[in-house]
Figure 1 (cartoon, rainbow, N blue to C red):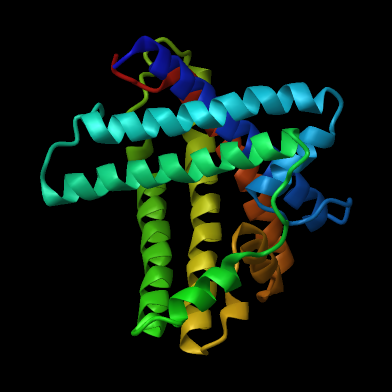
Figure 2: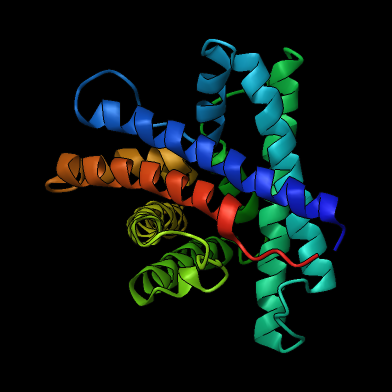
Length: 261
């Protein structure tokens, strides 16, 4: 793979890490009554843009997001990760491509924000769910989408518990202390992010089951839903700190991930 694409991919992991750190920091402030609020990736980008030298930071983040998108798409197309052509491997490669498209759209949002043409804010999930429910078998499709999110969350929990998330990192040049920090932040951060995605799946399933698209939501609504559960504020605070840990793990990934040229 072109070395430039690899460098852009590393910048992309760093940009992804910064977005999650800001997202987690805002959620942590909300959890402990210090201001802040539960938000999503776009909210985190807006917060970065409003900080001192925010526009410069956003330009770097935007380049990183596009770089991450290119890395994921090219990796999926060329099988740079050596996943193979088995059905399960093709599914993983498709997942890489979907992640690339998702972060590419986030890069487009950042560009529009920088050009003072932001897209409308708010929870768009209900409108998407409403469209899906309008097609034949739409309710079942919505529930299956929700179950897919839940299944992804369970898999991420398994990765965190088993240590498989370290598989593509080369930590031989890192000190024992750094290796321990990367492992702890990865386990904690991936688990916290999995909890958020799992709740997104629950919200989507509820929307399909009740024929009520308004039940669906993204990251911000997932965090709010977690906070409303029994002992929710404690769990909300733990998850919020975990999102910061996930961001730190992404910064470590930018440095230590094996990315074949």
